[in-house]
Length: 372
Image 1 (tube, helix red, strand yellow):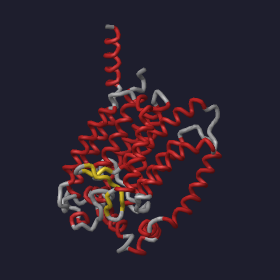
Image 2 (image 1 turned 135 degrees about the vertical axis):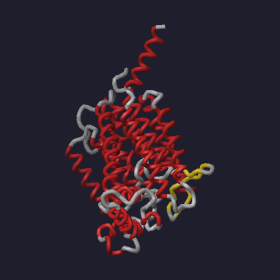
Image 3 (image 1 turned 120 degrees about the vertical axis):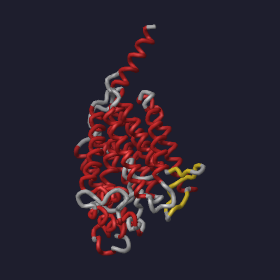
Image 4 (image 1 turned 60 degrees about the vertical axis):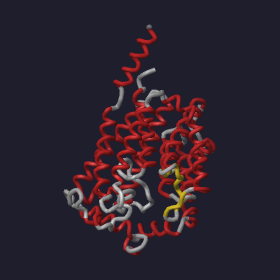
């Protein structure tokens, strides 16, 4: 009887620790995202905002299911999930569906699964598991040789994703892994060597990029050089963002959106739609919600009760931060266009599910940060 009472008390304590501020931020961003998609897809053949709402509902249920089990149990599943995702990434290269020259999707009934989105969560879980194991037995900060396994965990799926080709998602996976490395026990000299190798690797990899990827980088350096070609996306996006001015043109009144001048307006360039219709003030509101979410995630990572939970939260925080930063940077012309979605705003079932999986892990760590 005492055990039952103790279990009930523990469950009540976990519910008391549920981070409602995170849930509120997520719900508000989702509502704004669906509302924005309803405007962005007015000229499309199907109302994608309805499908997005269903994806979000399914993602929310999945996130709540993830919170039911102690996050330490997922440490045992991390490597199985990682291996499964690698298998799916190889399968994409062999039998994936080709759309606009890219092979990124696997058909699952009437739906398309994008394994590269799941790779973000797989890398987070695998690295969290490795760092938890490695730092328990490590007496000194790791040197260059201690980086071999975590870098391998990061770059193996990133290389497979780059083959699809999907430069944007590969960069996000590397950014997540790099952020988690920074929060591990690592020598400063080793960080300097990794940075030097990364710079050399980028110089080596550039000649091997696809021609359209090279043109995107070149158009970033010289936006007016090919305004009707490789620079078209960035130019139209900046026109949309700038034309919103202070308060925007109003919902459904965006001319760049309505006349379909803005490419990929319901996916990669969804923030451009928002900025055109809601202006600088509306953009600040959305950025404030993202800042709220990322700041809450940082707090959860800092207060995690165990090393595995800490690294899980750091990884999810990195996922949210880097996707938001890269997406908004590319649509405003600050960064090259690399094809990265804006979390919970851009249309895409695989993207939504992967973000909610990450949020489920984050909520899980928060709910158990003071409970044994």
